Length: 262
Image (cartoon, rainbow, N blue to C red):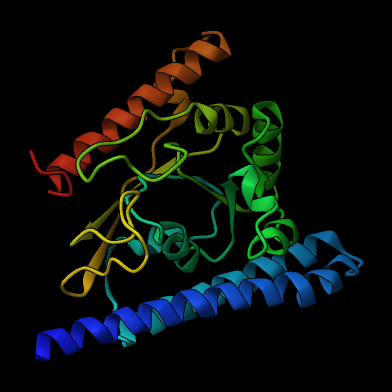
């Protein structure tokens, strides 16, 4: 009975959290976004919006932990709080990954799917925060490089969607590599693991695991993109070399840290 009651509590708490998130997203788009558009200074407007998003997701993560829905185990979180512009490249096992990384990173910008520009919960947020769409590769690189120069950390999931299985990654797209080489920015690899699995590509939101899940986040040492890319190589070859190297690096560390089981 106790185990059953715990499961039902976490199911209800999870549903309530998703509902609250959706309502807050809609209210932001309908109420806050129009006022943000009237703010006369674009730079301070974006800074204010990203700060609000950071605080909101920090609060949401704290609430989920308090409710017993999730636990959070972070290694080297200070590397995300330095406010030094970098490209955070992470694997993507769960739906909550972006929420956690935004909660850990004070000044962050994301590369997001073009579909979010039409999503009723997200359209105002992504516009007001000046997130970068993945619709056009050339514009993606230019916009992301501009955000880095403005002092923002770019959060990118190069798989493009959640991982296909617990121990497998999608092939990385090269966008982050082109951005790193264009902006001469360091790449910060981040490993994410969820035990037991929750909110994966194969699971519905209501498929709550039998116990509270633990989201483990391990921030690795930065990678010098220019040092890995072949010297004087054409941009396409340099980006391909860097992409393969970063994916191999992340995959190997996932194995070493036990996030992937052989």
